[in-house]
Image 1 (cartoon, rainbow, N blue to C red):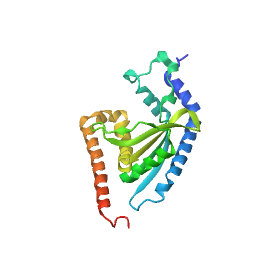
Image 2: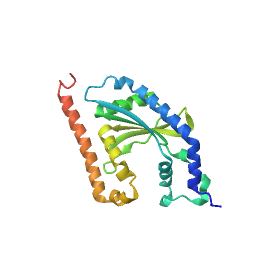
Image 3: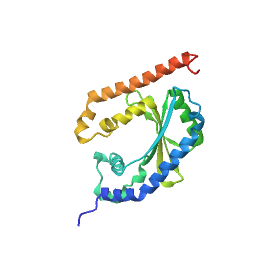
Image 4: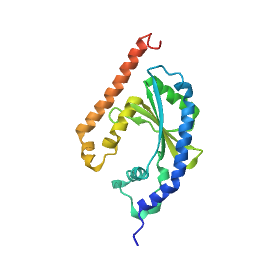
Length: 213
């Protein structure tokens, strides 16, 4: 008989959790959308606010758990010590906002609505500047695991969607590309350029009294 592995047990756990993960996604997205109505209904024509959600797939969840371990490897002798419920983003909602005024107001509204957030902001690796707000909390659909919320500047968030499979979670044939210092430098340049674009746009909008007409 083939020996049962950590991955086998985690896949079984994921199947059991999946209905609750989906329920948390549905609940959290609905609650967050409702909480943002007062903002989304009054946007200027150039402002944008988007809410999306996702269920983390089983393999991604196991990879996230594995990355926490020394050498990114599970200890087969501790098969029962691992659980996917320790991952804070099995169920996730992302709010994309443009420009920064909308981004900050979205964060303020959601903080007022949900006072039990656990905050874990995303910072720039080099400058340590704030890049995106990130929170997690328990929802009524399940008390077994926490659901995650990200509030991200829209330009940065759209860039992340492109680079997710190339840099953050590259396929084996792209691993060398993702780890190349040149590529990491270009990634940083793009992020900085997007933030500079948004800052300059907002500066000019604020200086133009006709922009809200």
